Amino acid sequence: MKILFFCTFYHRALLFRQQMDSLMQRGHYVRAFSSAKYGEGVADKFKPIMDDKVVHKECWNSIDRTLFFPRQWKIERELQKAYDLKTFDILHPQLLLSSGYSALRMKKKYGLPYVVSVRVTDLTGFIRLPFFRKLANKILMNAGGVLFLSNTHKNELLQKFVAPENREAIEKKSYVIGNCLEPFWTQNRSKPRTAAPDPQKELRILSVAKIRPIKNLCTAARAVELLRQQGYRASLTVVGEDQDHEELERIKAFDCVNYIPFLTKEELIDVYASHDIFLLPSVNETFGRVYLEAMTQGLPVLYSKGQGFDGNYPDGEVGYAVRHDDPDEIARRILQITENYPRISEACVHNSIRFDEDVIMDQMERFYEESLHRK
Image (cartoon, rainbow, N blue to C red; front, side):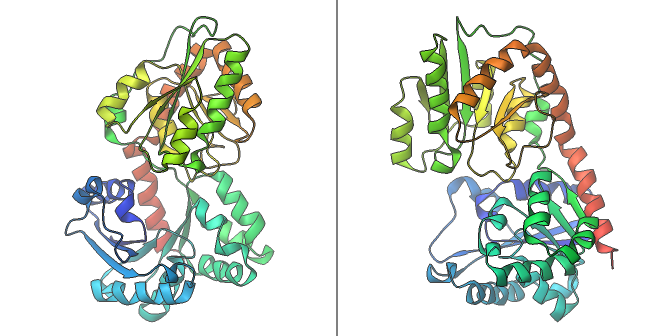
């Protein structure tokens, strides 16, 4: 099978390359087209994935970000220059509207089938406008398959944005497949924790995320401060790259917070080992692979209710879904985890296996094959 990934943020996300490499190891031919704003550049840590299997073009400007169609036409022009689209079996745009619209046009022009991914940003942007909602329905109806990272986002799209007469047809070709773990985490999966932490002595909470307001780390800190006010010896360690210095200063202003800058996964695994619970109450989250990483290390997780990770497991199995804007609820759930800690830790390690690379890639292969043969 010859697959072309079509994406406006390949150059900022390592997970696409992991998927490409896994598919190529299984005998498929996979290439990527990545587009970006003029002058955006590629960060050093992403340069290793920008090789001959990827065509990366800076082809639109800041004004184009708000002008939907001119931006898409510029990207399409470069896409058609970069690849002979007739030589591929299937096109995979990674966003419903921003890439899916061009995939629809390429299907009409070349007869090239496509599948489309739906992410959290698809549910918060253009699709809320009636014209783009109709366009999204057209893209979905013409796709061979529709890929979601969570049931939460699948249900939201179908109920809020898909026309009633289209729901059955789109649901029949919808797949929910999460992101797979990096091999490092599966190769270094720990044993479950057998002893529960004592909040009266020491309770070490960990958050790992890029420092941005959307990650909602100030609310995490407020929850830990509430525990301290109740007499518990709780602390919060925040690990992540500083992408918003003002937000970082707000986080560091909490007495309970210990901030550690970006760490490699080899360094991060030791930090997981020295903490008890993982907390990340993001405002929006497409999936949240970092929750899975914590689970491989036996850490129970607290994740945002109604966001990407929610719905993968029943509440209380590997942790709890919490309202992202409710530090009181988060504090209560932290204490609830300590009451059932060994059982939850064991469930975390065991349940993380379903996101191992081989398991997820089996599902992805089936997704492409069934989508390609669907008429």
